[in-house]
Structures are given as C-alpha cells and as structure tokens.
Image (cartoon, rainbow, N blue to C red; front, side, top):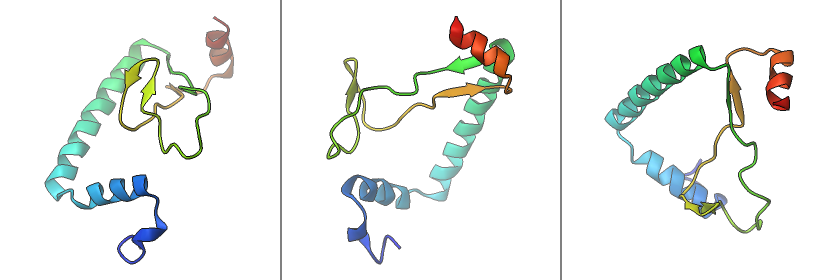
Length: 101
C-alpha cells in the first residue's frame, strides 16, 4: 500500500516505513536475537522483583501538529515511548498494595 500511495502517510510514518524497507534479513535477524536476549534478561528481573512500574504518561499533552516529543525533563530523544506497567502475573490485591506504597 505504501508504494502505491505514499502520500497517504504522514511524513514521520513515511520515514519509519522507508527505513524499515531498507532492512535486510540479516538486520532483522540481529534485532530478533537482541530482542530475545533482552526478553530473557527481563524475565530474570521479574524473578526477583514483582513489578516493573513506569509512568503511563511521560509528559503533559503537546500540540497536535507535533509528531512526537523530542525532550522530557531535559532528556533529549528521537522517538519512542515506554510501556506503562508490566507484571509477571495479574494479582489485583498486590497491584493495589504496590500502588498505595
């Protein structure tokens, strides 16, 4: 669809699609290996800690014409967001206790 209708996509999305289309099979394989290693490390982290809690919103709302934030609390970055809350198992009481502390 992108190749037939590139103007149907906003500029920031076009850039991401074009960069993705340039990836080789070897690039993707390396990324999958890195992802698997990170996932294993994260699972080990969760063996020790019950929760991995992050902010659900990194900033107040920003202008609709701004495609993505470039800075939060003085830390500059290009693109990306963090997941809000990841936990090993859903236990409502434990989550409420953690939130209250």
